[in-house]
Length: 84
Image (tube, rainbow, N blue to C red):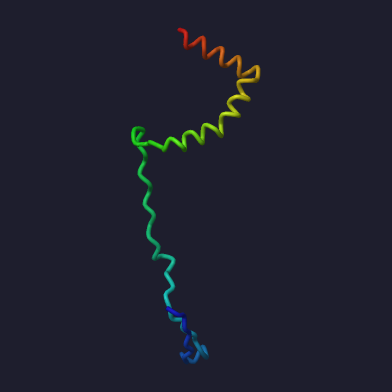
């Protein structure tokens, strides 16, 4: 719908008033956003390609951490706990 404007005389306090016609949604007319439903642990099944992509992104950081002395110590502690 094209926007048009019309000028028409109004009360004596103001000389003219402009009326703009057309569709302008009001700020309060927006739909209320509903909260997303929480995902149950068993309902989260991302596609395999997304898991692989994420793994490719974090793998270099994991490898760099375990190449440090601190990373090797923590891995040794983890291995001891697994053996018990």
